[in-house]
Length: 210
Image (cartoon, rainbow, N blue to C red; front, top):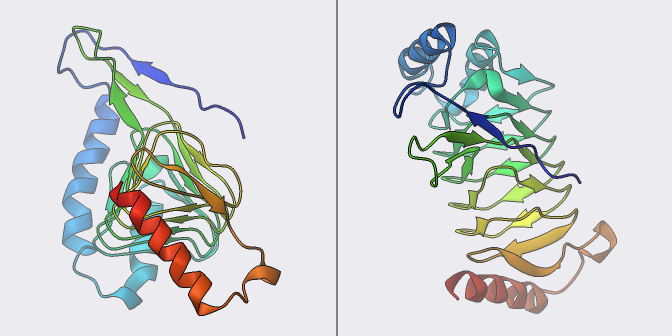
């Protein structure tokens, strides 16, 4: 795990676009064509949505799943690996690169945000940094992931959490800001009884509320 590089997008004036003319045209077309050709499609038409993502420069490996109501800001900044899943109304705010590892899950309405601003600068310069989600990781519903975050392999982020720091492999975090809860069970440990499972869920919920 290494720290992400933050990039400042300097402009001539406050409110000016940091993107090139070609990029702005691509974004305009994307904003028009995804709702027109993809947002209404049923789930089994995932292949059709992946086709449009590919046409707009998304790097796709294997067979990921992207929900028809997912929001993707800049598709050519997105990398999807085999069997990763982007849920209903999940928001991939890909001002910088976002990479989703194989079999990871971005649950409904989760928000992966690669952009912020330099609030000490009068121009409020745009600052971006990539987000990486590891293999078989899980980002819970309505969780918010800050710019520059790495979420490790088999890590888990609780619902409504705010992730401000990197999450190591197999670590479960929850809360705002997200805090360490426990290590994720290995396959040999997954045969715990229902009482233990209920206790873990209660602890996660209590931490989110707290």
